[in-house]
Image 1 (cartoon, rainbow, N blue to C red):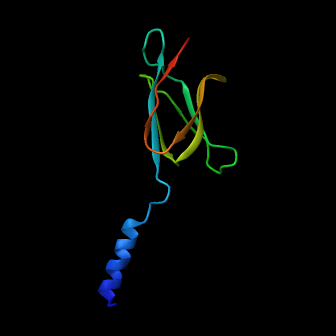
Image 2 (tube, rainbow, N blue to C red):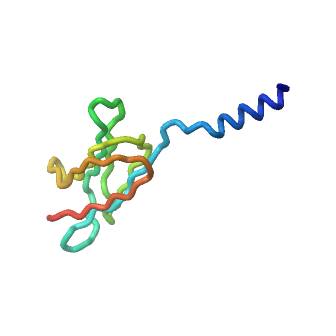
Image 3 (spheres, helix red, strand yellow):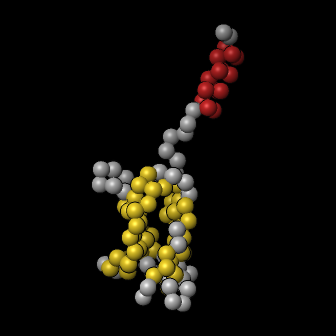
Amino acid sequence: MDSLGRTLLLAAALAAAPSVASSLTLSGTVRDQRTHSGVSGIVVKLIPPRSSSRPDLVTSTNPSGGFLLRGIEPGPYLFEVAQGTTVLFRERISLERDTQKDVELRR
């Protein structure tokens, strides 16, 4: 096989190979269940399993109650919404693609 043939074969193999862990996003809005308005200053946390070396990802909601977490590796997480030290919502989720997660809080 000539050099051009080897180059084309290598390029085809690389194109067909699955990509290494992609970087995902988790976005959403935290709303008051009664008024349906966004709640600002709420802490949103994504916690990987203890067996993982991945760090916790943390952000706060904006004035409209929106949040965005980036650079997430696919896999299972504990999703928490808190005000101060009080956890208001908690759910186990598995992220395999960019995800929208809205939460309504009883306050």
